[in-house]
Image (cartoon, rainbow, N blue to C red):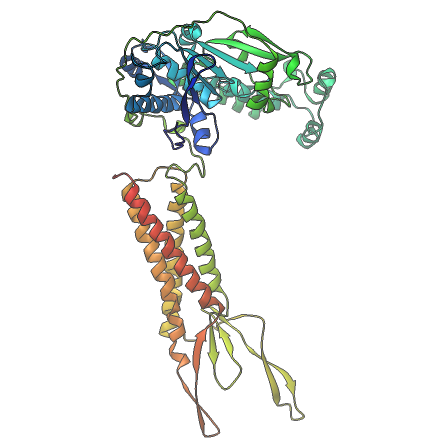
Length: 533
């Protein structure tokens, strides 16, 4: 049993079912952002190398790239731990148990490819793919897998209809519908917010859409749409996307005959894979993917068919499939996926990026106010900032118009142009600016690391920037030692020594400095864990 969930890893379990006398490999479905990234890597990938290693004809066949990566990892993990070799050894009580693979959603796609990879060693294995994505194998290979894979699709489920070809079709139809709209878009928006029954759908469409024959083909919008279609067609024809992928094996479509979503009303029938070449837009397209209700459906229906109770183990010898093969394959630039917070380097970069964002905000806030330090003299304490200061306000006058009561203004005022800043103040302003610049650069690298794998060299650069940011943020505090804070004032032959102390802004700056240092320490740890490069 494994719970790993990184870019290549996937959670799976190998179990022995004593009731039905079977060895079962179960692959978990989509549960995290890493899984979602793999779901959307549906670029066709050649099976020639994998076929040569696993003992099947892979030349000219293609499969889902993301699922293949995880299937390889499971295959290698099984070989490394020798789990199946132990279960099917001559001394094992389970040596005659058939091997069954199953999974839901992403797990179904991975299980289907893994079944293909294991079948040369276990010719009688079976795979049950529940609500599998609709882009696993090319059509010819899908037909060949009908001997050992059975796929289940529930009603209007969106996932079995997800494929590059279907996405292109949806985009083209959407552009066609846009060209047919004859009412203001805002009116159409409010009309679409209200659900429409099927019996009234044609009438409502006639009110908002013009017939296809009435579309003006001389408009700039229509010509741009046609140009986009042509460009996409030529690009798909030239790249690997020309190989269309389908649902593997035999397909059993579970149809809700009465539309009331009762498990007793579902009827199974064999469907053709091309029946799922279009996305069905319905209010149940997402809820039909729920695995929990699928269990209730299987309890209330019976699927009867021939099956084999024997398993023959040709060889226990697995050949390692190296995941690095995927890294070395050339991928078109526009097929690289960017998912914010997919955490390919783990969750620590996300935590560090959040702390760094807080540190940068605190540093900017602390240096922008007029309460960075407090100036002490014979008068009431006066707050001063790096770029602004507070003023004394007279709140009470005597009979001779002499001020007898002074308070500090609540408003901040910028230093006048003729004011000559002390060397300490100028240095603090410079360090504050450097802290903001280096902080933005470091923060950007941290957020990028939540989306892409960062090599050790890049982490080293991030560590240097974070340490410099922490240093510059701390050096802003030299303003506390301003030369204007250490003057002697003569009042009625008495001398008073002025001084300065830290105020709210300086305290916030100290907190910001500490946070930047914590982030730097965390980045150093990530740099040690990262791959050289």
